Image (tube, rainbow, N blue to C red):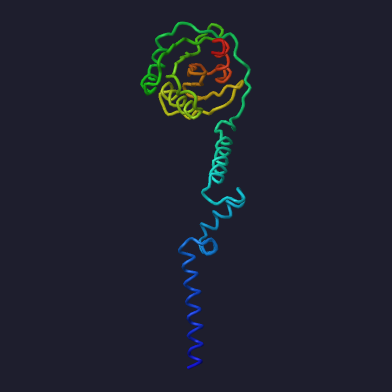
Length: 223
């Protein structure tokens, strides 16, 4: 009887200890949860590394996460890796009244614009007195041209309209200006100047498209 009573006592003690552990786990005891939940363990480790003395979900931890996200966003400028070109600027560039072929070339832009353009101006493009193509300047609705992503996508959309096909223009920096160049035919270039988008098409094989774009910018006073 005495032996049986001792075993009963030992068994009872074990059951009590087990009940205490289960109770601690169910009530969120940090030792048990940290050992049994990989997610919680990871959160605890991250919190300890970034904000000593704070637990996951506190304002300190949230601020640290937001700061990390902001740094990642700031360092992911899609234009940061654009190639730089240094063409010799075309001289003798002048603009004249638009011809019927210039107006016809840029006519599809209105339909492709999605209703985001508020004004337009089309001119014939000449180099040393020779007609080499045309230039169109469009003013975009206020506030839309602030995003570089919008600018790049919109320029490609309008270049496609002028080219009459799905162009694959390459983006470069020329004299600090981001310009989209499509070799064609027809060769088409496009870029933003503040709240305006400028498109030019070249109907001849020369001059170099990037150099011609710089010449147009100079002729228009840097527009």
